[in-house]
Length: 159
Image 1 (cartoon, rainbow, N blue to C red):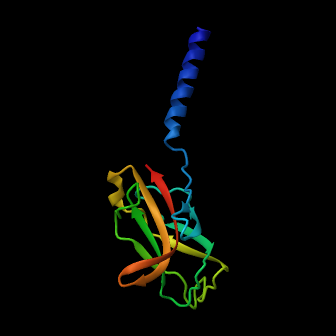
Image 2: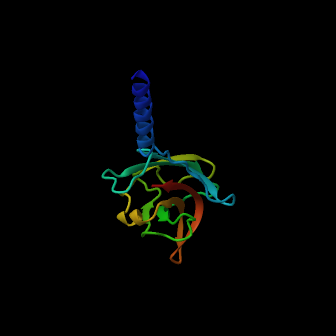
Image 3: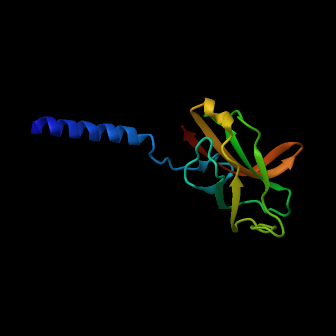
């Protein structure tokens, strides 16, 4: 009788562990996009992004650029892409990277550490049909409807 009880207890413990694995927190790990671009340090609060997330995520972005940002023409772009990052899944969100009255104020000198916070909209519901996607954060200047990228970071996410 005691052996059956121990066996059932072990079995229930294993089932609860297997069931809890899906709720394990997946931390975002942002990496540099290319060695030719400046790297951005990015953290997200909360530190996992889920589909249908009711509260927007807060992105803390910092770094040091090799180019001087003079005015508010520099954009910070947050984009959701497929697993390889080659195709955008939804329209990217673009924010002014610096402005006179916001943090960081313009100009941002080259080689000087900067820090900014940007609010991300909830994860688009279009992402529910795929299991893996990437968030790409880039900073650059819009030239002829194309972003001339100075710095970039990305992170892979899996549902």
